[in-house]
Image (cartoon, rainbow, N blue to C red; front, top):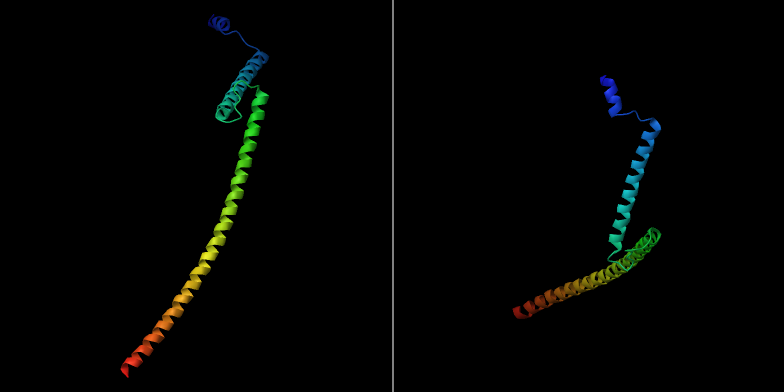
Length: 127
């Protein structure tokens, strides 16, 4: 008798029905996740020239592609500018190091001349 009650409460479901339900649930999760990701993209583009509030999915993806391309181009420009700045810095650094070396050589020559003149002055004073 208890077996019959359980069968009435939970009628057996064939495997194809369970498979269909699992597939439907899985597909709904996939669609929900896709919708969340599309909304995230819309939010990311909201503060850019490529905003796509009411655009179709394909237009949204096109705008995302354009935006990524523009960021990539901007990054390349910054890298070129940075490399040029580094090259200029290296050149300026080399120039300054050469000037420092020349000034050090002049200081050494002047110190030697000063020492020589001090010795001559001492000789003259001793006479």
